[in-house]
Image (tube, rainbow, N blue to C red):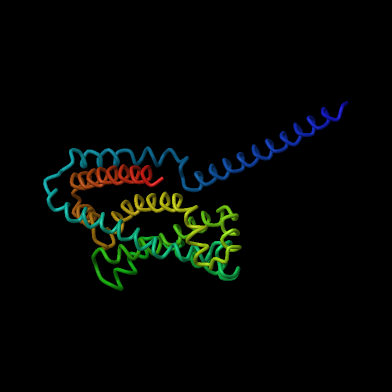
Length: 268
């Protein structure tokens, strides 16, 4: 056999081993998913059969939607939108400096980077609704606790994404700026941020879209917004009004997602 033939056979063997490892990994993931579905009772057909009448009854009570109180939802929807925008703005203000300190190529010391990654993990480990309850107890009812809950939780997630984007920038502009005598701040503003701004904008806009949906949920625990109206309708068992509120939220989500898509397109 020629040398080229041996090399080709070796490449085929390596590729075959890689495909086998990938296949085994996919099978392991599928198995884990099936086990998780089994643990949660997804394969218990009797539960679905027993629950069908109740779902039918609930659906019949939700149709047709009752929009008679729509004037009372305009201000809460406005507050929900304001919460999402304010929460996103505060998230960016908190996340960017933390991400610069956490990213390995911009942190002043590796220990600082590791410590900040732990802090970011701690922020995102607590759900927004728990933070909402805590802030409602601390600062009272209204939109403010919702904004604080969104910002604190999202700082953990957005800061992580920001740090990963910063970590993968091209190091050559940073090296050139350092060789020219630039300070650390100048290196970040002139060599790092210009490379990652499109990615940071994408992450921020996606998080804003998420914040609008999360703001609606936070209203349920007293953080203001349309979620408060939704919870009131649920407590009064006005399911036709519940469906109308859900449709109103859906319409706003579609508008916010469309606006987010337009912003992403124009910020590239």
